[in-house]
Image (cartoon, rainbow, N blue to C red):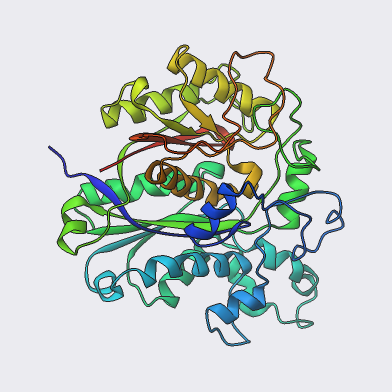
Length: 401
């Protein structure tokens, strides 16, 4: 039997706060992180609510004890801050001397910084843009993590839209199983930018008020920012060093429904296949799943497709499910890792996270998400869904050990 791949440490920062405890406390208190942005400089700041991390770039730089003339973008700063929780829980020398992978994910890289410096780019010599010019590349934040923490891992950067960090977890698990590395730090980071907001707004799928996943009257998503990372290793490796095992990554699958550049198949073919195959890999039946952290973007197409897939797969016996995006906004490349951590925490704490802002079921589907915080629930297996543009679908199954 193949060795189990387990999660032994996590770190994250979202609009709810820094660290898993702050995030879970906010959700237990039904406190959303959505608000009008302060740090993102946009003419739309008073128009849209977003899941903006409360820390300014200067505050994050101070947390990281960086010099004033550092060249880290906000995206990289979020990644470095999220990573601290893992680094502080681990003997970093093991990460430095034993084979390690760092699989990071992003969608627009350092666009948040580069777009502010555009006037300097088109008029060279007028500003301090040179030290930031490389930050636009999504891989720059990956290299920044390795350099800041003095790690020399096998590195990869994944960009598959909103499923990016879920795919990062898949790749890390596969590298461990193939014996390429002993451990893998996997996750993703994305910062709010005018580029992202304007792009999604041009698609007419950004809501001005807090989003309403799976609701009949949903009008679109709220953008968010953040970063999250999970440390993967074999069960034997974790036990060898006396680590606290948080969960087993028992199954995973990615698929592509090849339907449309930005819209999923309305029949949910990709979502259905990836959930089904993740469960098959984990050796699970539909009745084994206690909770689904749905992708749940509150866009017209996604919620119909995902809801159809859930209804079809679970055939009248639908487990608890909810979208946590009304708490954090849609954090794009970071969403898969953030929501994987939420799924694990829900399983460990025996709670079902609420789908906030839900009022009216969709007319097309006979299902509704969980809208209350439910406690003292025996959850042994969870699914975490991440579906992105281009039909990039990922489902992750986590199991209790």
